[in-house]
Each structure stands twice: as structure tokens, then as C-alpha cells.
Amino acid sequence: MDFEIKRIITNEYSGGRYQTVDLNELEDFVKSKLHQKDYGASVIKFFWGFELYRFDGGFAQFFSNDITSWKHSLNWLVSNSHFDWNTFHKLSRLEALLTMKAEMLNSVLRIGEMKRKPKSFDYKALYVDLDVIIDEYIACDTKS
Image: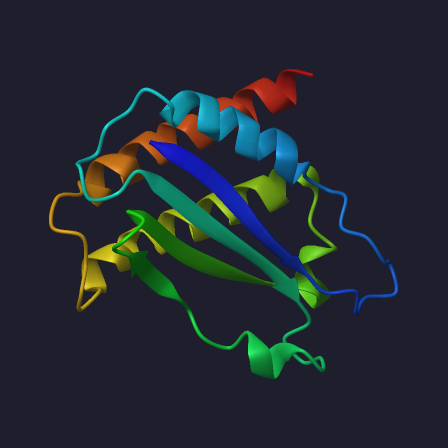
């Protein structure tokens, strides 16, 4: 299965750019681990949305909903997570990774709550694999 992190990062914080975790590196790591995995014919690509904005800022009104969407014609599944600049920028690298892991796993669990969901997709197996993969990434990251 293919994997991609869709990034939406607003420029509302005086610190400017988000630099705690390299999202490209994380995406490449997860993608390489999921590349040979098969969770069913209904989903060939999972997009995880990383949305970082100020919950009390001007863009909050556009990001208030959790979105979990299945693009049937493309066999793509999209699920997003929200992160608040006000708290996220204060996190250490490890804290940020653990927070991202929890939110990514929650985004996978929301698949089970969808009204129209893929018929042939083992999201529970994806959840287990992502849990292990992110732990492996964190373990490798803390060794460097």
C-alpha cells in the first residue's frame, strides 16, 4: 500500500516555520515499510492529513472538522489530524513524534466509524502496523 502525508501548515505563529519533525523523512520511512503490505483491494493509498494551525487563529474555522474520506474511484483513503500551533511548537522532538503517532492512529480508527467505508480494507491491521512502524522510527530517531 502507498502512503503520503498531506501537509497543511499555516503561517500564524511568530516562530514561523515548523521544524521539529522532518515530515518528508517520516513519510519516506512509513512509505517504505508499507510498500509491500496489502490491506485489501479497496484501498491502494492512504493519505494522512497533518494540519497544523492555531486553534484560536484566523484559519481555525476552515479546519474544525475531522475528515475521513474514501475516494472510491481512485481507491484512496484520506484521514486528517489537527495540531494546535499554540501547544505543538513547545513540544520536544520526542513529544511531537508521540503526539503525531497518537493522532495518526486515531485517524486510522475513524475509518471504522465511516458510514460509507471500503468493503475490502483491513484498517485494524494498518493500525497495528503503523503502531509498530512509528515506534521503530522513534527508536531509530532517538539513537541518532
